Image (cartoon, rainbow, N blue to C red; front, top):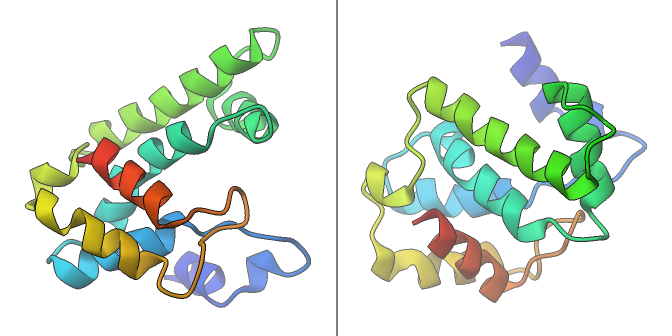
Length: 143
């Protein structure tokens, strides 16, 4: 509860840009369907990571892979990033969390509406701003 309180009150983001694009995406999932926020985040996050991985974001994924998962920093940078994403997926699976939206009862015909709702106030995220079509692409990959 203490960690949740610190995370939700904004204290951890003072003085730096934060990227919460997966959060508003998940908020739409749990608004339409009876799933918990954490499960929705766990399903979406690896798909979001794959979608936003590019030459500009690569460094962040390499840092994540080396510092969180202990991947050898001398490996090819894209190899590190992809291994980090895979280890993230494996971790969520080890907790018994489904990997696909369809596994928690989400219906494909609502993906477009949820993507539009996610971006109803504009693009989401700072890491790589996502428009409605980007969100829909991630939802489809996660489906």
